[in-house]
Length: 167
Image (tube, rainbow, N blue to C red; front, side):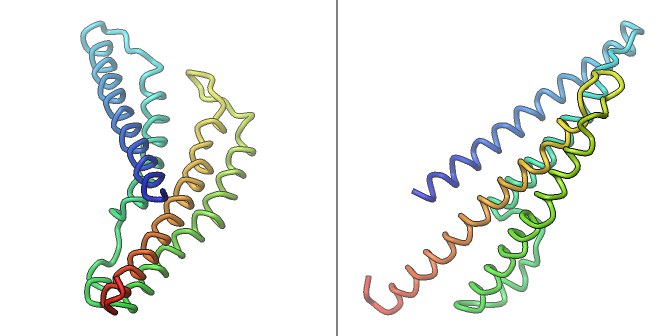
């Protein structure tokens, strides 16, 4: 059940960031076309691209943490085995979880609240809506890290039972 939730969440993040990248490519092509061919650049594209890049980067980071593709010291984990490896991986996941819950979530909420009255110059979007991705990503990272930790514990227990010959 937890695997299905984690896989579904990761697929949603993957498809969403992929779609955002495709839209960004189209917007960039449109911007180049209007600037150099029509000699009248579309003003909204640069701002929209910037905002989409922020959202894509945050959602991509949540995906990377969920799939364990984030930057990490793999050689340390690979150098260990058994219980030591499990403990190191759990510590790493706990640090990421604490960062998401204690820094990214409250910091994101504070950024959203303090910038809701500021508007983007061209599209007139509240900047707080752009920053809304920070608390959203914090929750996504926290959920994915909890699922990663549960998966680690379940797999370690399963391997331990197999090694003992009880499975």
